[in-house]
Length: 498
Image 1 (tube, rainbow, N blue to C red):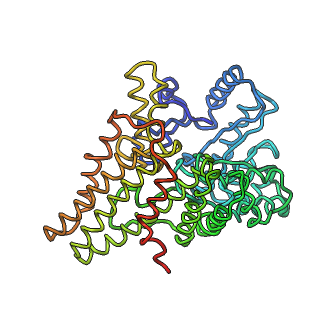
Image 2 (cartoon, helix red, strand yellow; image 1 turned 30 degrees about the vertical axis):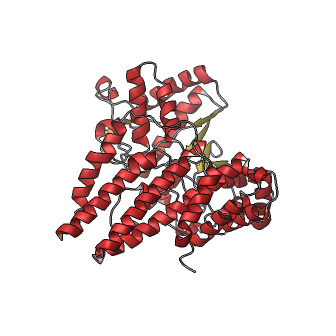
Image 3 (cartoon, helix red, strand yellow; image 1 turned 90 degrees about the vertical axis):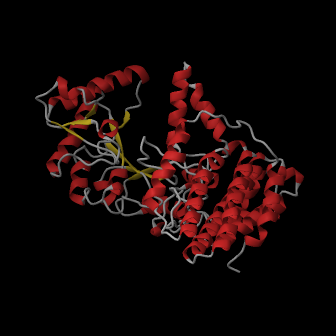
């Protein structure tokens, strides 16, 4: 795709090149060199790479190549864009005459101001019809095929992206996934050839992945209410009226996102982002539905056969986690109001309550094997062949789920609600924030967000990435008992809207 190590600049000083940069990272981390498409070096390097790739892995004649994913071309001329596409296809077909170029369609979503219909058409039409397969990456939320005239004749796959960064949080649009693929396939001049999944992370929202995958065997949308009732039965292996009721409430709330709101699952919930006085949860549903589902699942857990099912215990922990996530945000909103109104005693009480919730959340997550920081760190270290190498892998594993970059360039992008991470990272950030707010109240001075940002990075965020303490790699505690006790403890805070 023309992107090469920067050392190539010294080897070919007379070749036209430019550096293309990603995000706000320092240049040395995120700015490879791009060889201009009119240079023979573009095709030469592309062919050499592809030959080695095929020798190592063989081929099915489909090659994923992303020219300008989240980076813009060095030129805005449509001829430059067109020549870039032609150069990629030339490199592919000179090695494999049957090559089909597979390309993510994310670039058209990421920067629609650059990718005008004219530029998009120049790129898409630079390849013979049928030899470029587009992954319409987030079809359930932002279908591009509608805006770019079925990708100007090129075939595409309708995809559910669903998740960014592997974040945790209940999220999805059953209606969109139910109807979208069939609307696309039946549209005029449709070039849709299949369905797919394109998440940045899995291991959450199982119901959405199962629902989407079943589309491969469907010829039309299904009755979602009936499907959800059957899902509860299939998932737990036994019919239970409380479990069925819980899933109905979840389907009517967290999994009933209206795609037109453009809310995407970046998991930017108050408990996992750097604290400030201006946080806002992206909530598109009535929290009471989640609380009711929590209530139903706790009641369902009284059935000993159901309580033994791993899928049920996971769902109970996940819905309890979602409920605590909501309660923490509610606590934050009330605490913030007390700060603004200088209600010191109420502020102190709510600060204690929030800290208690963080501790309870960590205890809850420790009880299920799917929510353990220790497993993540252990697996990262296991790839090292020396202690030094294992330390490096652990640093990267810690960095990626927290500040992601030496200076926090895309901080909290891959936030995880995991045991260990809550207690050792998120809670210390919030404790420092609460202490800073209290100091402002005591000293009658405004809260200084800039100063807090500097302090929290130096005292909590960056140090966490260099720590080497260990965490449990197997669950501790009884999930059923913990969830039941937490519901009893916080029941007076539920259903505040009623």
